[in-house]
Structures are given as C-alpha cells and as structure tokens.
Image (tube, rainbow, N blue to C red):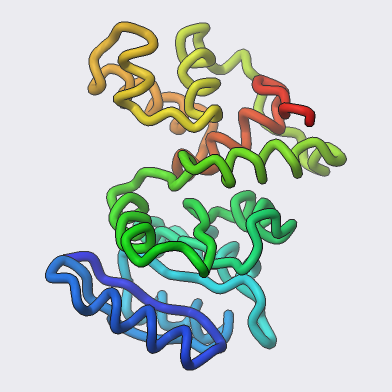
Amino acid sequence: MIRVLIADDQALMRAGFRALLDAEDHLEVVGEATDGTSAVHLARCLRPDVVLMDVQMPGLDGIEATRRIAADPDLAAIRVLILTNYGLDSYVFAALRAGASGFLLKDADPADLLHAVTVVARGDALLAPTVTRTLISEFVAGPPPAVPTAGRDVLTVREQEIVELVARGLTNDEIAARMVISPLTAKTHVNRAMTKLHCRDRAQLVVWAYESGLVAPRRR
C-alpha cells in the first residue's frame, strides 16, 4: 500500500486527486494539506510514502515545504512529487534542487498521475518525460549555483558514464541495454554514485550532473 499526502490550496483539485487515488487498491490518501506549513506538519505526523505537492500555495510555498521535508533526516523515506500548471515553470527546477523526486503537470492524464506516484514511491525519479528533460536543460543554462557541487573525481569513469545516462532520462533497464550490463549492475552503479555524491535520489543526481558540467544543457 502506497500512502499519499495531497498538498494543494484548491479544494476541487484535492478532491479530484483523492477520488482518483483512493479508487486504486494499492494507493491510499492519508491526509490533505492546504499550504506548505501544514504539508510539512502532516508529513511529520503521518509519514506518507509520497507527497503530491503544489508549487504555489499561500504562506509557505511548495518549494520551501519540499526543502524542509527533504532536509529532515526523520523524513528521508518520503518522496515529493511536484504538481505544476506549466511545463516550464521556473519554480520546478528549484524544487528538484530542494529535494523533489520529480514533477507532473496538473493536466496530465489520470493514468500518468497513478504511474508517477508508483514510480516515485519505489525510489525512482520521474525524469523520463521529454518535458522534464526540457525543463532541466532550460534552467541549468542559467547562472551556476552559489554552492559548488562535488567534483567528478569522486566517481569512477564507469559511474560518470552511468550518471550521464541517468541525466539523459534513461531508466536502469535502458542503461543496462546501452552499456551491455545487467539492470541490477546498472542499479548498483547508480546507487553508488548517489552515495558518493550525497544525492537523495535520482532527481538530485540529475541536478548534480548538469550543475557539475558532466552533462551540458542542449541548446535550442
């Protein structure tokens, strides 16, 4: 059973998400938050597997709420899935930096939302859709981060190759096929890279890949 917390200031959106999620046998909505402050509070009290987090909410916004959840060691098992109205919302990349495991457009098909929750809950990042790669390429082309990222020298050559493929949006199975290794070996390399770079999940691994210069943004 995947336990979900919905954080959105619009009652109609929360009701829609709840109806969709509760209709699935393997999903359960355990709470609803109307702003970022209550989202953080309920995350600490309810310990959901996934938080569906709206970006723009009154008071504490979804980005800061995501940052507080991701920074709390007691909440390390919680994954945040950002909900946004716009495919190229500048706030979304900031949310990935803050610790979100991915994002989804609010007008996505219901099946895509159900899939996204399942993917994020099992520890993967929702980074395969083209819109996500476009967003990352768009916003990492801006000024470098104020805090330097860890150097590439902490990774082996093979791990750097693996991280580059992760940043391009490939799954473990696709990486395995590309590099002629087993999916388990690919997963092991990904996990080792995350450990060395102190990345919470694959989403932050992708952020590191771009910010470190390992992967260059694709210019239009």
